[in-house]
Image 1: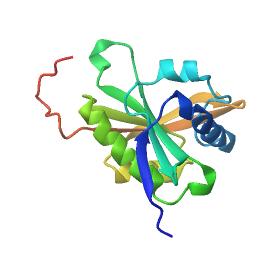
Image 2: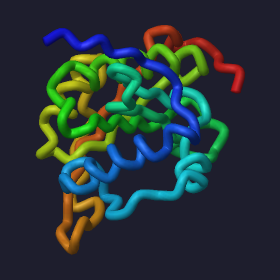
Image 3: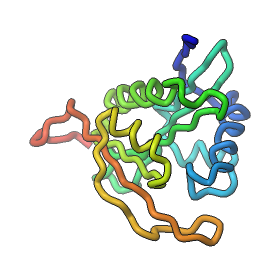
Image 4: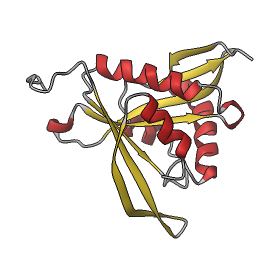
Length: 172
């Protein structure tokens, strides 16, 4: 089945669908350390206002992606963490890849030079997706935090923009 997926920006009016998909991800125990979803106000404050992407199928929001700053320090202004969530019934249809490729493009337009992924090692599909889009594994952080009383590891990945030269001075 060929699905025509349209990628658009999402806004507060899309929050109920974004929240539903996020809660599905939380329920898997493989997507995040969070055990409850934030309010729209908390989400809005924690994420960049650009690169908030929605994957839509027949106008239904079925997946989303967003970027959050990794630090408030100005020297890290071009480094962002990637979040991608797909509704359970639409996983394995290439939607994550389409969102991630669009997110990479949008991030570069905004001057982001490094994207980071923080993923549970058991979530091999997510790690493979990131690698297929130019992310490299930087390392594994052991026992970095607990989820439901259990210590968990994470794989840290990163993708350096090819649009920003190594020696280029950045105007940040």
